[in-house]
Length: 106
Length: 396
Image 1 (cartoon, rainbow over the protein chains, first blue to last red):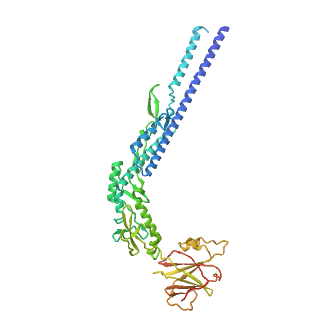
Image 2 (cartoon, each protein chain N blue to C red; image 1 turned 90 degrees about the vertical axis):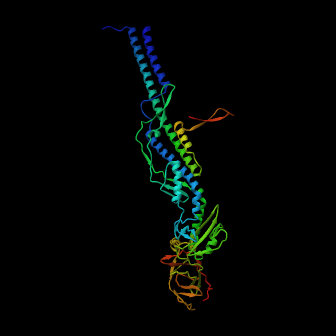
Image 3 (spheres, each protein chain N blue to C red; image 1 turned 60 degrees about the horizontal axis):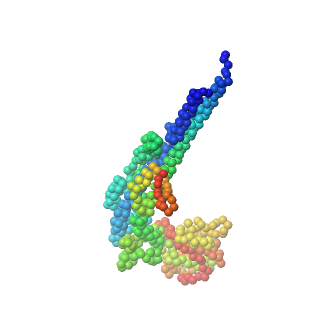
């Protein structure tokens, strides 16, 4: 049986070390990937729920308007529902003090 | 490690780093699983579609209502509303029956024309009731397009391009509902509705009063004119009275004040004479008998006008020495002798006089008396209780 020399042992040790480090990074990336994917789905579910609630709120507002004997424009209602479903709640942004503010959608 | 070996290891690290960087930059984490709750949200969104449709139906109904309201208001004071007519004007009630304005066939046709144009629907029944216009139809509408109800999400086609993708595969969805409507008609018919309510209140207040004109004079609003808005004159026929009310337009209608109960007994006096109470009251036409109620409960008169049963239901019993007495007055002697018998009633100077004796009625204490009239098994309301007087003022 041939005995390993010092250089050979070091070589095996480095091989082992590199394998461990490689496995660590592989598992790290897989973990990040899975966690990110699940978070994204959770966020998506929350976003969809929020959009649906916004549409509900909007329909209630329009119902109140109608009950006040005011006319509503059904085309505008359809567009607003479509926008809420696609983009969610409009958020107000300001481009700075003493300048104009604009409504943009998320 | 020689140079060749080191290079090999660095290449492995480089590949791993490149893979990691790619996943982080692309940010398209998709494990082939779908977001939770999308199926349920699809149904909620389908229900929202129906809400939106019903909103459009109500909107169209409101617009249609405003267009036809003018014609309907005119009919309220010209057409027979189901209670008949009195002096060529429609009766708005007949005894207990209320006759509300109905959207008749012609107006229904007009209404349906507008509704069909606006939302493609027609209604079999349209009714104005309690300030609302209500429409019913047997037709059912269906939400079946699952594509529009399924939530969509942004998907990355590459690093710089995105598209809307369905969160679920399309599936069979069927949500059905009746597109009924109920819209406020107060503004369109507000004037008529208010007037109708006021007129019914007037009927409630006065139909059980014998002296109808006095009650009407006391209870009617100033805008109510008898018969005509120009020359007012009181005319009553078979307890029916015609009115004219001038608002944005002139309303001509009649009200039926036929009593639903016998007339109440009023102007009762009760005087103590030699240990007995002498009750005196004006007779009620067509009354078959009378019931005399007496009590020592001082709060008896606080809940009138009301039925005797409801009044004495509130009388406290436990811990109090209150009592309720009852005497029936059915046969009346036509003469008025000086010596009257206990428990008998007499006809004296156009009034009925009854002699009441009860051992519970002690001299020096306060007692309260009320009478009701009976006719065809119905009992009148009690309108007041009178306190027994100890000194007699009655003369036979």
